[in-house]
Length: 233
Image 1 (cartoon, rainbow, N blue to C red):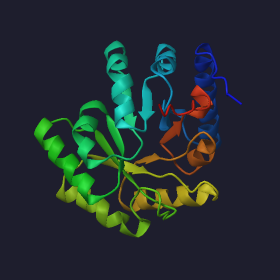
Image 2: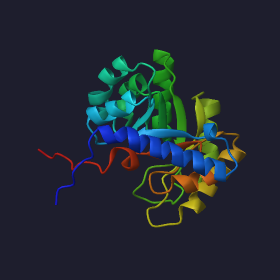
Image 3: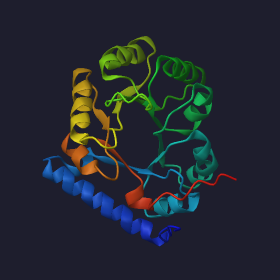
Image 4: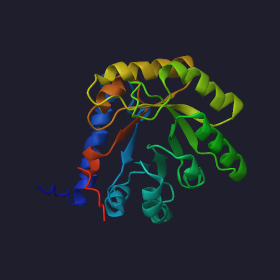
């Protein structure tokens, strides 16, 4: 069965609906709507669908892969120069130069080698995208991220030794576990390290994340629809 993608004209309505849900969740948590920023995730969707969201007035987006972002975003940024782009997927050290050039926020800093590569690139180019430390709150061996017990030390190295612009933390809870436990853990690690930015919550659980202090929520499917199948040709 082939899933039909929604017409691009529906994206503006989807986007407005998600923004309304964010505002409602923030109000329920006694937080102003401006405390929470939506990162609209265009992963695997063609540039035309992302452009529809840009034309609807939205400006904060996320991509999972450097190569895909390079294919879509130079033209989009030329047309919408105020757009901000987050890298929310794993970053290989050999792609640091390209990532620093294109992204405004790198949410997936997760190991010393990557942190050092980012520090060198930022020193060389003078371009300093904000950085978030990815914490593997579920300690899943197949998933990227710093183990919680190593988080404080790694954050200290990134900030104090490497002078990276660390603004906060990011996590992706295990699929079949209660997300609130992971959101609470991320909030505590951020609190004790004096960090204000919490990137947590996706299409299925962003309202819970807002209750636990999320300042960035990463939503793709609820805006752009199901991701199209990968082209393996």
